[in-house]
Length: 350
Image (cartoon, rainbow, N blue to C red; front, top):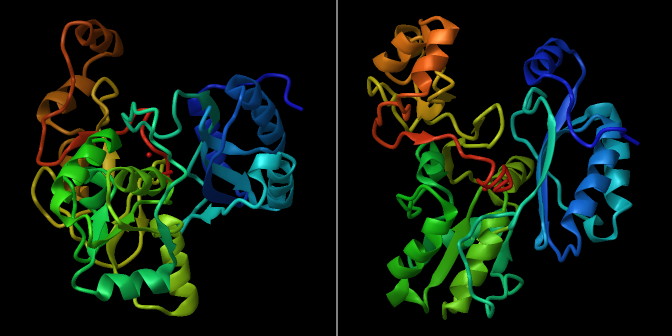
């Protein structure tokens, strides 16, 4: 059992160690909505179990359940599964295995107690999140979305759907999940009797979103079970038609998994076809945006000339100026900050 219940090694050092390591690791995500009476106690217990196994990643725990995105040493997967099985309410979990994985997705283990595992903005005591929509596997999803009367809605943020989405889906222009819920409800208000199909990265947002729509009178609400990640696994395993185009945005160091060869987004600086997300090299800015290799070289991995010039200053001068000026980066179309710890995980995992 771990002596310390938090990481005590410099993040840069951990990153250096992992990048140079040849150990094979598996990136996966899972979630479960379940009552947790004492999230802080459970958090400490879980940290001890996972740290002992060498698990890295980001996990949120709340009274409503758990939302996790982690990297596990491949040789310790049986131990990891046994650790989960030792906790009664985490038995028989569906583990969403990453589509593309070099094992370099996380460099530390962070487990945080949050008010909710997905920030939804819902403050209604009558809302029942367990009354979710009907699950669809990949085959059923393809069949139902072939019907022209079906409405397909992407329940992710715009910076996610910008690089990849299902054909024919509604792509809400929102920054957060809490914005998207009322937006989608209002958009579909006169279509409550239609078949509504929702999808997200790994399923966690759709659990709440489908229940939210049903709570507001929508009759036929469906959700893609396991999200884009599980859909991709099934279409590849069963040789089904793939309706997803582009890249699946993920909330770890990779920032994306290639699902189809299509590049549907553009560099936010020059407009060239590109779907590579990055964070501005100016750590006082850290803007999440799409940047092609040419602009990366031209701007030294920064989002603007201002940030490029700033990172060339001596470190002490950077710190002095950072106290006086704000850095949000030049706002190119659809550019957005990388999600904070309150954002959903890969499951969607936010």
